[in-house]
Length: 492
Image 1 (cartoon, helix red, strand yellow):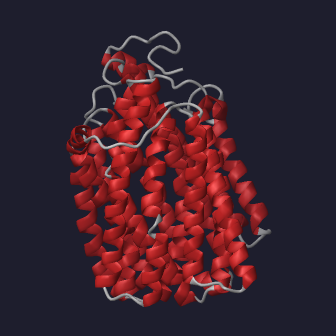
Image 2 (tube, helix red, strand yellow):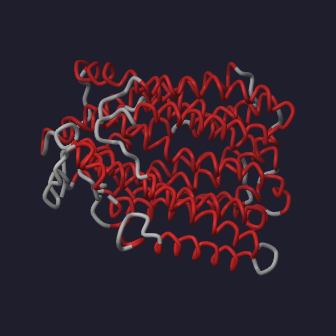
Image 3 (spheres, rainbow, N blue to C red):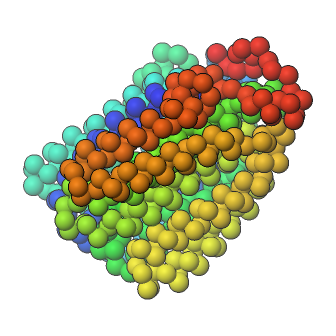
């Protein structure tokens, strides 16, 4: 699992490097108000796109894992066809929102251009599912890096040519999607023959089974991203720009849990319900990996956020520091929310998900309505953190009821938080006393050193995180599960 996640993490952070460099160019080329409008466009399309995903991939994944060769190509072709239909509908919804909402003309034009990604990437994600089912994760990483590199070059050309605007930077995102899709098509043609076609019967089966996930996904996206839209309505586009800087750091951290749960989902689907021991090993291993990453990243960023924000976004965005801290902490909590959702899906327990997301939507909107008028973007940040805690608690109730999941690895989690507390104290002591990059490096070294010494995942320290998922002896005794032979129940 960690090797697969490692490939995706490397790819995602190469993407993040290109994206960040491009964003720094955009920040310097656009005024603060225009940057806020540009970020509003991307956030709106992100909300529409995530809702339109319908979480169908979790359902289609089971069908793909059961077939091979031409049969797999047929499933993918049908799925791509369905995704394209959904993409066109999504584009129409996004355009209706900005047109009927009376937004400025530059936002309408930017949405019309950048919204093309809703169609292009719908097809791309249909093909990517085949790669996830076969764990061809390197090609996924390459496609993402290639697309982001093309967008970065496009952004440089726009800046050098002196034509920087919301519209031209929107075209750069379309160039990204086109390059990514072309690479996927090229690679797929060498492995599986895929023909896009319409299969109403199969589509209906997928949509019917995915209905609880689709509703939950829609609500998930709304509660996690609605704050940008509410800021644009209850505050100013300058506040949107400031808050969006915090989202850049949050999204960067968000690449880690996605990279972990992608192979974890495949492994848990393969082991449920026939091999509960393998299911638990995968869950436990993913939980510990995510805990190590979330605690370390949150502690380090909370301490060194101010110099990092001002270095990357200049002094005029220094007021984004506290909002960035809140959003990164919220993202750290979301690590576990994402794992809880993935675990419930793998076990076929989909009904709790929309309930938890509905709680999140109602709570987040209510908190934003109360907090934004008084505290602007800081109010949105606190609303995000509070909502994440509540949603995780609701999903956690469902996860612990899955047979074999308990007991949770409390000792490993305690070691992670203990290492984070010690590293945090050292980081605060070093802040402003030595150059902050050196202080950050020492803090990171202390954290991972303590995690290694405490053997958070058993003998071997950090090396154990990259080994085979292991059982807890207590769980084996309590659940009466015999330890399988090495590798039993696990995909190759």
